[in-house]
Picture (cartoon, rainbow, N blue to C red):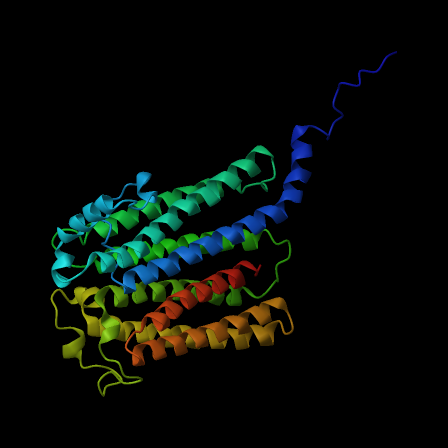
Length: 356
């Protein structure tokens, strides 16, 4: 009796072959995801520089595709400069020269270019990993979600810019905070996936996992408050510490004089800066207590080391924030403060993802 060698033995079909291939590709996928996270970090950093140099309104059109090419002729530069002269912000800089305009144009153009490059950094390797079957099980829909998040980020960025092209001389602090928080969420989303590809996680009591989750959320909220501070230029007032013009807690008349009362939380520079300070103290306190609790509960473990590292990073971030305030928000210190916020949040995500 002859044997038909064309029949695939049970357990060795295409699906079973794809599983080892996906396992072998997990390392490459993880490296790619960390690279994506680095690109998002760079985009946030350049976005911070764009905000701090008041460059965000220098490009008055979206142009998702053709905007990747900067002006190449004198006539093209004149056209871009003329468009900028039509928006209210130009009235604050009536003596601006073409050379000065090119300087602010560069920051906004670079920020948008990194956003476009990020889309390619995600889409092209994703297609390659997908086609070659090297994506770990269950990761495909999450990566499609990542592409959607990046596309949404671009749309929100233009929505933010539009708020400063008509009646305002700067973008809305609400839209600025939305833009930064979406970028922060996307960074955390990528870090969570990348860290999740590690096989080993540490078992800790459920209470410690809860505190680690709370730390992630608190840092995220603190970044949102920082965006409001930046949007309102609230860092340029009350440049003393720990008191705010002689008060550890400003008078209620200063904190809640606007109507409706809730608007003070988002539009009153005194209240926004005070809230940012208070939440910073809370984050630092929770991080320190968590580090002590984890070190006592599971001493000598990777979880304990991460918790201590996270507390140290939070302390460093607080020191940078205080220095930035006392020095009246110089560009270098402000950028360091924003960059370190992303480092702290990423570490909070890595720490929480490593717990089971």
